[in-house]
Length: 121
Picture (cartoon, rainbow, N blue to C red):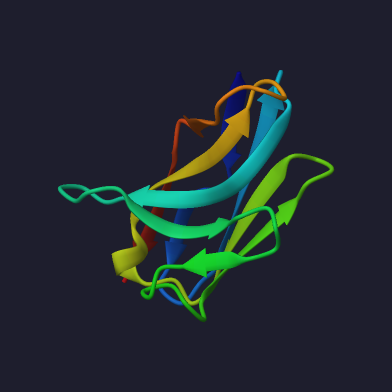
């Protein structure tokens, strides 16, 4: 099992910055992709950015050039640096990870509890 705990959300003015952190813990063999999703009120959850674990990253078009995802595999951590924040970035941000509980197990998808990011205009 993998537990994901996010931190770093909060209230910030437009143009400001926040850094989200996500720590993975528990008993698992390996983590593959780790990333961030967000869900605004009345909208579907959407991918913000992810890191495949092999060094490649993906970003939603709406955050390219403003957000940066990074990962510390030794600490099982993933981060999201959010700069030039806009009111439309307001959402609950969820950490996501694909993990293997054992060497021969099938991968499973895990979610954190979410952290609120509010950007005021």
